[in-house]
Length: 57
Image 1: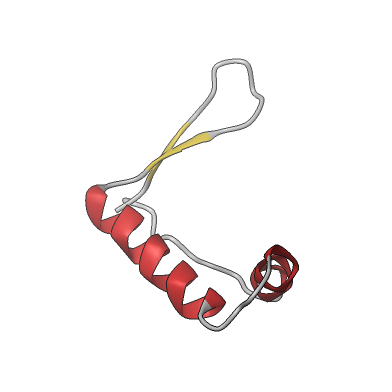
Image 2: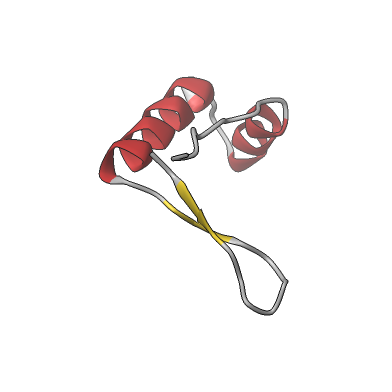
């Protein structure tokens, strides 16, 4: 599971992904972009999609 790492400066947080998280994101990306023929098609498909990663609690 993903783990959010707080930034001491209070700026952007870092998210540490496990191997399974990365594989999950890649599979979802491939599923979403399957059949896209151009960079523009990929960007459009991804902009219409939300990918969630569970956080380790």
